Image (cartoon, rainbow, N blue to C red; front, side, top):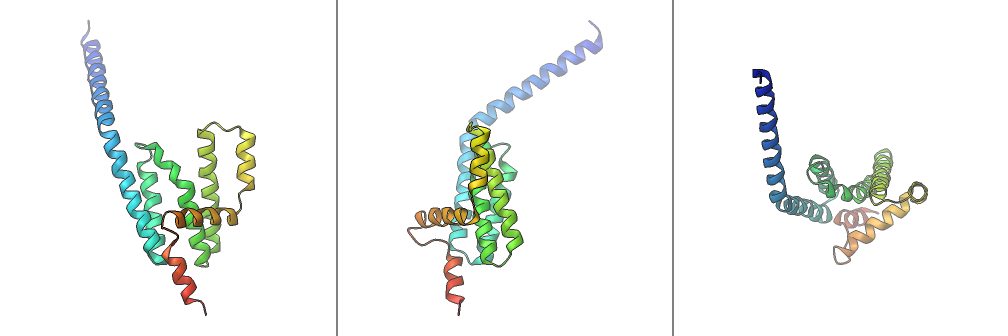
Length: 166
């Protein structure tokens, strides 16, 4: 056996060992890492619900960035993207940023389409669902979700907007 073959086999064994160790560590740390990620997102969601418009936007953007940054290791996090972008769409519309609201709404629809593909819906069903969702539907869904998860209160920034109206 040549020296080159010995080095190749040694490297192959070494890489296999590293891969095995990485998989073992990932499996044992997976639940803990997922739980920490969910806890982090729950905290950002609570801050979104209780914050003024600037704080709510900041927490939504941080949450979305956190999901994107961690979704390779924890793919389940992507399931929160449709509703996160829908919330951001509503907030931007209420803030008068119509272009940003439309962009966020379209991102919400895109991530909803990805989730529908993941669960195995037929392409026709996905397209039908995609085309049928309006911004008003999206707003209604997130407001209902937020009210349900805040004991009927909803996001604080909306109440602050109503109080500042003449």
